[in-house]
Amino acid sequence: MNGLSLQRFWRLMAVGLRTHVLHLSRSGVELVMAVFTPLVFATLAVYLFRAGDSPDRLLQASVGAGLMGVWSAVLFGSGGAIQEQRWMGTLETLVSAPTRLSLVLIPITFATALVGVYSMVATILWGVMLFGVPFTPAAPLLFVPALLVCVVALGMMGLLMAATFVLLRNANALANALDSPVWMLSGMLVSTATLPAWTHPITWALPTSWGARAVQAATSGGPVLWPSAVALGLGVLYVVLALVALVWVERRARGAGTLALT
Image (cartoon, rainbow, N blue to C red; front, top):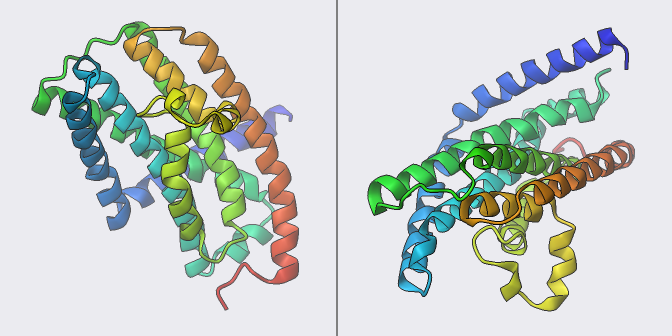
């Protein structure tokens, strides 16, 4: 990629990111999901941890609830964006445009992840202001970098999800099915050690799992750099898989005529 192409790439990313963030900020459904859902997650998590035998892990509960909100924003935002393009009749135009479809989807997924950052901020503030949860991360200098790594990993995984959503007429149905299982397998709120042994290979293959580990380690103590590096490495692998899948999905969708609603 030469200098001019690289400049065009970053310009496309910046314009696409700004456009989709503004679009999400004007969507009533997205606003409700972004504003209220994380607060519900945080309230339930704090009460569950406080009622159980881990009242000293309330900050970890707030952070875990925030991660759940980020994942929901990425998942439903990616599926919803593809579905809206199909409803508006512009998905066929995006697929047939000279710009690669992957370059169109990348800003969408990262815009949803960026909006999802509010979930983390909201849940932490909600816990501190309403429940008196002390904000004392074990590694304060690594907390924000670990969070950014987790958001980037989520965005990379969202790109693979969006690639499959292009082929589906009802992408929200798949999003509904993937919401709870992924955050459970990623250990965002409940440790993966409590899950059956056969699920552990699945958790190791999810960048969300390693990203959540990095954030939780920065919150309660433990190694942060190693899970962050694994999360980014798996995220890059998911991007490569998404690029390969998009080529097949485009050909399959064009051949089957499944891009439009009619």
